[in-house]
Amino acid sequence: MNRFLDPRSDLVFKRIFGEHPEILRSFLNAVLPLEEGGEIESLEYLPSEQVPVLPLLKRNIVDVRCRDAAGRHFIVEMQMNWTGAFLQRVLFGASQAFVRQLEKGEDYALLQPVIGLSLLDDIFDRDNADTYYHHYRIVNVENPRRIIEGLQLVFIELPKFREDHPQAARRLRWAWLRFLREAGDAGSPGHPTPEQLTAEVGLTEELRDALEISLQSAFTPEELAAHDRFWDAVRSERTLMNGKLAEGIEIGVTLGLQQALQRLRATGMDEAAAREVLGMTEIE
Image (cartoon, rainbow, N blue to C red; front, top):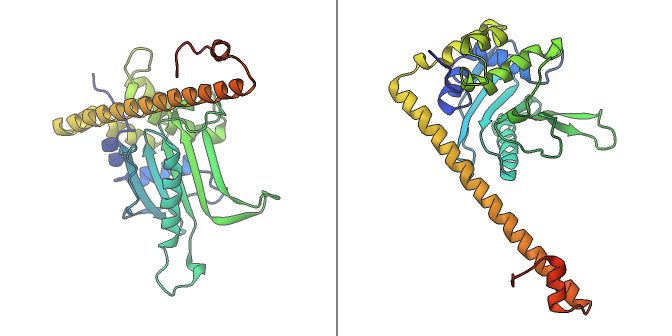
């Protein structure tokens, strides 16, 4: 049975969104918070700019940059793993795209808005378990309705995406995000078949084209091998990051116990009694 390759992988994501401007246009119109009447009419691709590589985020899948007929710039990134440094990298890239629009001596009035879209196969906001869509812009702190136009950032946490009954206005966004999140698992136990997923999310010609492009049969044996190597690398990076997180937690707990022990000693408590209170059976 033919199956879909995972569209979150670099090979497939670039094939879909980096080579087919009409598909990218449909996707951005569906997922971005564009004002009514501000939909993207057409797109042209722009060359990617050099953005610093983060050591633990080598799987920065793609950096698709484009400009629409109104002059707005869009940056689309797919990121598998999250660290706090990634936020700074996104802000750097969007700011760079804003600044580099002008040549020396040109009028600032020529600057056009930049919208950065980051699709995350990870979680960065752990305080809001049900919120997967995050829209940032520059606002007046005392009056958020007053907005400085020019730069917007959108983060979508795919692991949190759980919409089952989307509002009519968000149905296309729901379909695109289901495609990104579920296509790679279609046909696996507990998941819809490729045919079922196509029937459920293939709401537009562009979505159906994206599904067709993702089919395994559309790729050469060499490309399929590269796809598998990509996921091996992603799993390795996640294991490394989880190991560093566990190591950091262990160090933090040890330091906290040591500080608590010192405070109990300062109250005059006996060493053995203080260790018993803290559950410290050995010298930390």
